[in-house]
Image 1 (cartoon, helix red, strand yellow):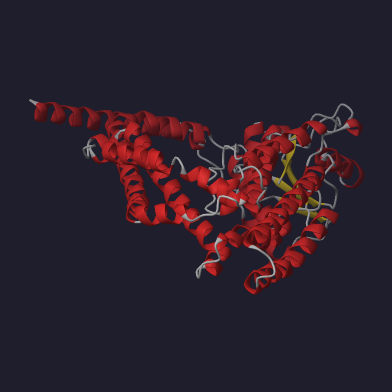
Image 2: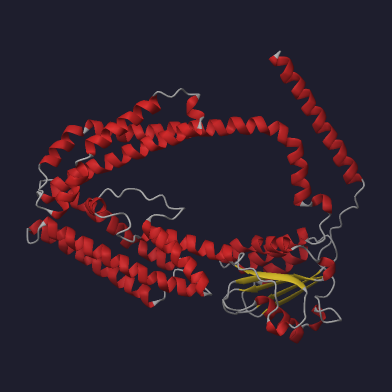
Length: 493
């Protein structure tokens, strides 16, 4: 009976697809044929001096539009605060009044303008009323160019933007994304429904097994070293500030190990079918995280014993304490050289000076430890102070970054909140993990502001502000535009 039901379902699905194809054929057959014409004219006003005309002009001349269209390209060097729409209108009124309709209120019919400000980092698209498209489609044209423009590929970005404009301006209805998507969704929904369900279950099952394997590796390591961990803990000096804090963490080590054991038993009792459930994936991830944190903690206990008692393995233990700080110092230049990183600011100079100074100090502390002129406790104090100083410098630099990107106090507050969330480990894009070091055990995760956390906050902050701006989008023509209401908009990249 089940086989007959499946066969009937397949037959119905085939008939449904055939009916859709017939409907599409009728609709397409009754539609006007699409026109494909290259630009009737191409005007290039490269006042910014960033376009390669030998590459640009032939490429634009070969692009096919749906209707005969004049293409105008305008670049100029402005600023972040500029309104590109207002500038394009000013330029047209001054240099190319033929770009404007006879009544002075719209862009001329048959015209498509692509504008670029490489300094202020704005891109805009404008068109006559007979070439008018929606705001979403104008955004689409601009977005087609942005990846290239962000890499300073001005010529290729301009070509990409014009090409997308040619696809969307006067696009026949049956070529629109909405029509294509709706049509295929209707035809494919029934066929894909079951497949999607099976795919989700397969992906969930694979994720559960991956988390289970991760948990098993950490749990096996902890179990194998259980006696050694207890021995290391028994000889950590309680008189040490760091030793006593690590021992405090160790006191509930056995309890947490027992909880991890219980999680392990529950996860391993799941059948392959049960592993495909989301609740099982959540349980497996909980087990893996618990085991991984225990595995990191037993390493910290071993390092505390070796370093504070100056055992033979203390140099290795000390290197592990330095690792997070060294990683931060190594990542500073990449942070400062990225877009919006404000690498030329005074706070950036302070960070670079601190980095160079700290690299020398790390070597000095290590030599002093080896020579016995400072205690392990003092060395850890030096490291703590240095990381605290770096945190303060990063906070100061965050303000410079915010000042450089935010245009309003509201945007500054939004960026500041994202930076603070990143430092505190509450950034929604940042799954903060336990730092396997003595300082990471003694101090909470938000005590030190790391370079990865700064990067996370910067990326999230810029993204949040850009989203709040609507991609930096603007449709108005500013105070000098008067009653001009031509179709067009600009956005930041």
